Image (cartoon, rainbow, N blue to C red):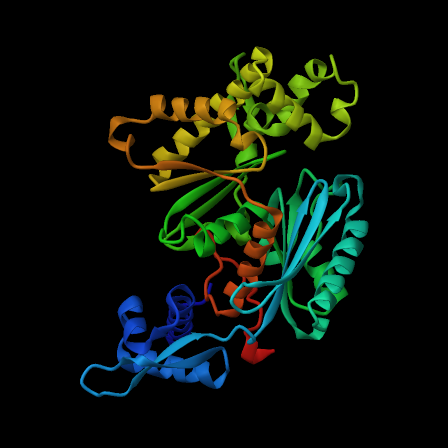
Amino acid sequence: MKTADPELMRAINRFHVMDAIRRSGPVSRVEISQLTELSSTTVSAITAALLDDRLIVPLQLGAVRDAGRGRPRVMLRLNPDAAHVVGVKLAHDQITVAVTNFCADILRSLALPIRIDRQTASVIGDLVEDGVRRCVSDAGLDIAQISGVCVGLPGVVERSAGICRQSPILQERDVQFGADLGHRLGVPSTIDSDVNLVTLAEYWFGQARGLNDFLVVNVERSLGLGILHNGELFRGANGLSPDLGDLIVRSLNGGGERLADVASEASVLIEAEALLRENDLDATLHQGRAIALLLKRAAGGDERCARMLAAAGEALGFAVASLITLFAPPMVIISGRAMATSDHFIAPLRKTVSALLPASLADVSDIVVREWSDETWVRGAAAMTLRDLYGAPWGTTGPASAPDTRVPQVGEL
C-alpha cells in the first residue's frame, strides 16, 4: 500500500469523487462536496481533470438552477464510453462472460456449458480466452478496446499475484491464471474469489447498496465468504481472499473438521448419494441434477432428505453466529442458487443463529437470502476491474500490505 503522502491523498480524493459520481450521478459539484466532505476547490480541481480525461461528462439540466445565480446547474455523470471491461465467472459446469461499459452496464454476455472441473488449467485458459474474444467481438468491439478483465472462481485466490492457491474446480494448485490470461489477451487481467465479486455486486447494484459493512456467505459446492468493511473488501496478506469452507469446526467425535465437509452442497450430496440412487440410478452423474432432486424430495415430504438439509443449515448457522459475533454487520447475505434458497436449509440456519447470539447482538444483523444469476456474478467481476480503473488507491483492508497491482487508469492506457 502506498505511504501517506500527497500523491496518495490525491488518489484517495480522486477515487472518492469518482465513486460519489457513480453512486449518485447525475450529481452537481456542490453535492459531490457534501457526499465526500471535500472542499469545493478540491472537487472542482478533480472534476476538471476527470472531464479533461473524458471519464465523466456534463449534463446541462435547464430545470435545475444554482441558487441565486439563475443559470442551469451542471450535473456530472460517468461517461459510459470511457472504457470497456470484461467479467468472467468460472463454475464447475459453466463459463460465463460479459462485456460492460464504464458504468457496468452489460453490453453482451455469453455462457459456455462445460465441465470445468474435468479440464486442466491450460485448457480452461484456452476456453476463457476464446470466450472473452468471442464476447468482445459480439459486442462490436476489438480486444484492444478492452481496458481490463477480471475472472472470478471459487477457492482461495491471491489477487495481487494473480494466483489461485486452490479451487474445487481446478485440478492443479497455485495456478497463475491472471498472468497467463493477461499474456494471452494482451489486456490487464486479474482474478478474484467469486464470492468477492458477488459482494461487490451487492454493494454496487444490490440490496446492500446503501451499506458500508456487510457479509456475504456463498453456499454452493464449497462455502465462500465476502467481507465488506467501511466500503472496502477485506483481504488477507498479499490480497488473499477469505475462505469459509476451510474454517475448522468441532466434530461430533470431539475432533476437528472443515466446515465445508458438513455444510456445503458437496458434503450433503456425499451423504445423500445412496438415498438419491434408490429410485434414480443416474442421480449422482450430474451434481446440479442431484441437488435439485434432493431439494424436490425434501419439499415433497421426504424426512430423510429434509434432515440432511437441516443438519447442514444448523452447521452453517454456528459459523454465521460466530461471524456476527466478530463483525456485528447490519446484514448477512446468504447467496446461492440451490440449497441456499431451500427453507429446509435456511430455517434451521436462522433458528441456530438466533439461539446462539448473545442478547446484545440479537437484533443487529438481518439475514437475507439472495439467488444470483451468473450474469450478475460477471457484472461483479466487471465492477472489480472498473473499481481499479476508477483509481482505488488501496488493495486490502486486511492485516498486511499488498503490492500495488492496480490496473492502469483509462488515461494511462
